[in-house]
Length: 340
Ligand code: SAH
Image 1 (tube, rainbow, N blue to C red):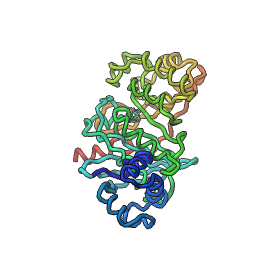
Image 2: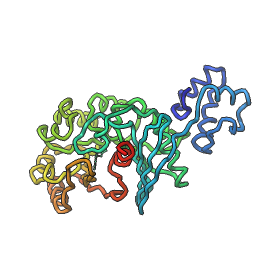
Image 3: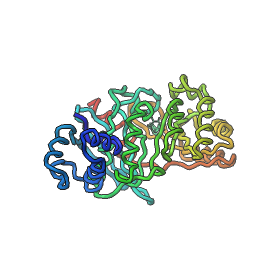
Image 4: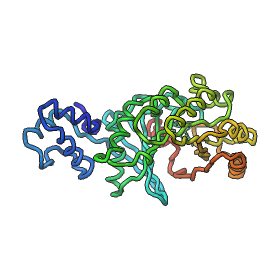
């Protein structure tokens, strides 16, 4: 039985038409689910008894469950258990401009980036749309507050689960759904070029972030095996096309790894690579984990890297560190659960 939280509103409209009901019923269902947060069909008081039975017959409304929550001052990390006993996690962050949530898109990840905890554990399966939607619903319910932005940067490669991730985005973005503005939704990819091209043609004003992490092919291929399939030149050319087509700025994520990709010459190469592009670099202090040997760059090194980019007119920010005390490195909570 399909989960109701898998359904975009236009799909529900088609469903209602197919059972000889009016399509506005889809809006009524959305209103219960996403505005009133009533998930039980039998409590949807403006539906006829017959229709409730039909819905109960055709759709489940099962929720994933929160099995662990670790918080500190401005961060909380949630571990979710899925219906098949797999685990994924989300991170909640309180900023001065609002509340953001980082959601997972797969159970594990096959991209195999050397520094990443999520990739240490191979992909078990893609998340279904409802499992991403429910990460948001359950967190909002837990904190009794609305989430203002969503980043798809948790466990998994969103573009290796493109269709479900797009449906998720359409549901949370829809006015009648959770109504999170497209400009407050960011999807991050290690650089799967065909999907970046596909995203260019979606009628969605969401943000795109690219995990670059190295300014040349030699180093990037060592860190990220995806680079052997789609190299830097191809990636940058695709991003230029994306920027031209969508008129949107892209974010370049660059996790600074001590002694690996954080030297002055790396910064210079990066500046040269991005010259003239409508892009900004987000320098990410590395979250160290017990299982992987990489170390985080010193503060001073990161600042020097930042200065070099600035000097070459590259927009750059240093990501604020969240949750390092609570195992917030992507995949850390899940891998503890799985290794245990
Ligand atoms: N697969 C997608 C999204 C998930 S990872 C991607 O590759 O973009 C989100 C970001 O966190 C990526 O830039 C990833 O490289 C980075 N990251 C992974 N492990 C990290 C760690 N331990 N510390 C800091 N950033 C990390």
